[in-house]
Image (tube, rainbow, N blue to C red; front, side, top):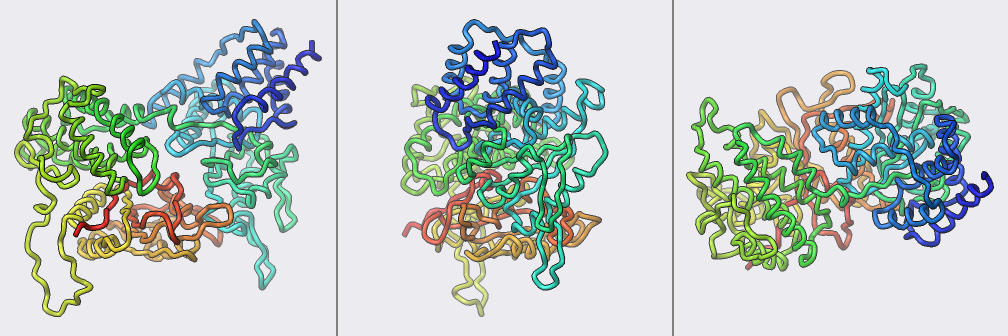
Length: 640
């Protein structure tokens, strides 16, 4: 029996390499075979009486299914069913584990989508077979949440003494936000003194720890052939980290190395074959789970009837608009549909301020009818300024026509839901485009031109320079509006537009006028030569030490970091931009590392605004893993 089974393993991998699509993270070499054998061995110990072909089939699925793209899964299942005809797999007993996962998903305010739970189970299975593995996929696919939910669930199982599991301690490092010497450690050029790097310290602490807890080091950043090649001995069966100082640290059996890149285009085959792969695709998650989570965060003044209305509006408007912009419009910067839908929800929440406060101590209560009208109007406004905000001038005209037809109910594929009551007064006036108006929250709400948002005539001071004057226009009104609302609600913002549209001037002017007792502005201009270390120093220079390892502005204030020319830093040979990776680690995880003693520095009460021109010329594309945190507002070049 064993001979025929061994031939089947070889046949499976041969057929996979011939028939499936070629991806950077697929690998069908000797190490892949070995991990199948390990998995089969584990299963054999667990189910001694079970037929071996069933065990092998289970092992093949456990090890390989996680890394395939959606389109390759049916092909792989076809190959397997041809090689193992009529073998039926027993349904595994996973109720305890799945319940632990679901309670953690609920705790983190996420949605228990079957696909997401399946992916977490795959990560868990992979963790048992390989000590180094990668969670790969585009942003917004749930990579970070997946391992956090798993860590929480294992902790719960440990406290309940189930499944012989242990709780998890993990530390997150972005390998591209620091230099190689700061990651592994280096010799001082002058005194030849050895200093440890961030990874060396963390790795040693976990390897020498005597507790039973599982320990993970998470590398959340792009994988390239330089820094990860030094990990070859760790990811091998040797499991030893060799440092330049000659020290060799043996990895303990409780440790795992988890890599979290968006893709493996720059990784060498040596790396790919050493790691297990779990691939998460955002489009399999879709924006519907985001919307379900969002519905739970709505303010309490919104009744069930209003929630139904908002739900209908989402189903009616968002998908057609996303499809239209994707197919017929040109973008200033490439973002995913998930990101646009998510931005829309954030902006919508920001606009609901008055509704959330209605009926509280100093504000009068709004009638249900009025709330309904406001919710509808604000929804249209939020959709235009997020889903339709990253496209260029030409495409805006197309989007305008499409959007007007859609909300009038003229589009037969997407009829207007019954609950939505839009009259002539509640939709955009006919003159100009949908981009020319904002929703003014008075009475039952009205659409007013942006020019009305600029209120008073400013007095021009006598000694002013011409270059310092800011003459209010439609564009400046929009920009000020979004700066005000996003800073008030602490949402990171990216202003995008060609040079000469006044992004920096307006923002700087706006920051200067903020109340000094609440906000401390900190402006940074990035250039092609800016390094991550310089960026870190500039931001830290305006922060005080609150307590050990926690830094922030003086108590009661917010620091606002304004990064101008965000996409100017030059790309390294493998395409990473260290300053951006550093900012991403802070926005994602709220901390970075001290460069001298490698301790963790948590950053609090810092807000982020940035501006950049469209990619091209000296400017680069920036990674989607960073732009996913930002609400993007694009500013077109002025009309004459």
